[in-house]
Length: 202
Image (cartoon, rainbow, N blue to C red; front, side, top):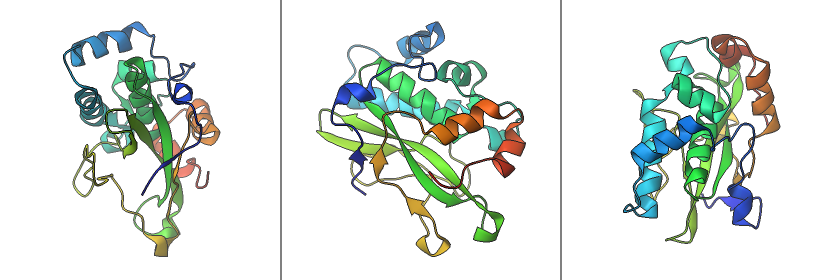
């Protein structure tokens, strides 16, 4: 897929907010540990992506009830669902000047449509050296789910099954979806949220 940016200005994909709080000292500290001035832009994006994918646990995978939302909160507790992890990836990349937005898929929540649907979040990242947007999914790998950093062919966590009514939305949004933020901000138990409260359409 060729992702389509919602906004024309790259600056819209560099903004800070309450949720994308990249000035937080903890985010600054982690960036200083991961990134050096000698690294290329692509190396920086790869390093941050691998960190969020591999070092931040997906709440469902570890069966944690904790709900995280703000990027600094996700980094503090090192866990969150895809909505939260996409907030952290955006914050960390924006902090080093890489335009980063939010992308979504509509997926079956578990194996089949009768078990319901959910909106899944990933990120769109602009690679200046290549003059192109790519999509990266830092959800976290496990048996049956394998997402990789790739500049050519997308290697996302999930393949879309159109027969099941799944959707790959092409737009790269400058801010997180309001429904996904509301879900995180109003939920008290991540496991219950994951099973029963995730939005199923943008």
